[in-house]
Image (cartoon, rainbow, N blue to C red; front, side, top):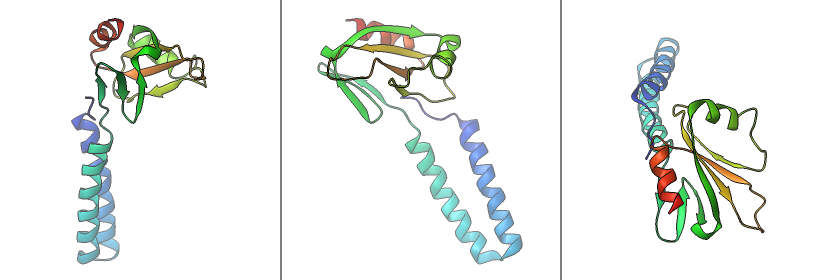
Length: 138
């Protein structure tokens, strides 16, 4: 499970609070309070929705909302931060499936061996990329 770092959530909340102060200065107390409540609810939703869950069971790999049967997986390769930067920008295949979080710089590249699927590989952010690679190789 990859969660957004505290500094990022705090920064976004700071931006929301800046908006609350602007609303308070322009309109008054009640609209500012409503804006603060909405901002607080939004920051909780952002924290929950930005979490990336990677699961593997005996049948399939699930990364966020996507899933694929294990029989269609090819070679899994641990990717360091330099290679990850290239694979998600300059060297990215437009047909590939990218599921990453910008605050994590390592991941796993998983080749796809499904003749019906045009996706050549999945690029998945992982803070334990070597561990995930070993599990996928089994």
